Length: 147
Image (cartoon, rainbow, N blue to C red):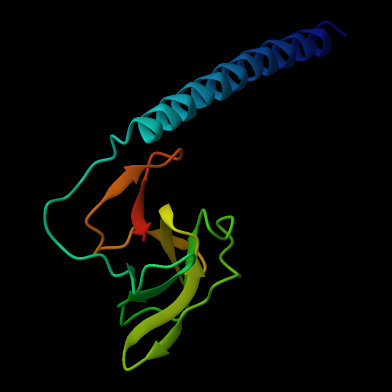
């Protein structure tokens, strides 16, 4: 009986420690997200001086037609995700044309964050993007300004 009670007590202590760690970790992640939102509002995203974004607006208008392209010879599927499609990898798959994954969509004018999803698992920042910003998961998102 004593062993059972001791075992239950150890489980309780272990669960309490992990529970507190989880709560503290969640609180910390919200602080990081708040910092990320503040950086975004201040427009302090990191910028790379060279390169041309693979996603470029084709004409100014009330809505902007944007072309996306991504090159990866090993890819079997590529989609573009971002704040414009609720980061849903099923909404905007790209099509393979002459070894390049391509697609277009109409976006509202403004600043948009996006990534490519390669093979349904790898979330990749656009290697041709000249501007990126930290995302809430510790990675980077590409920036596109549609005008």
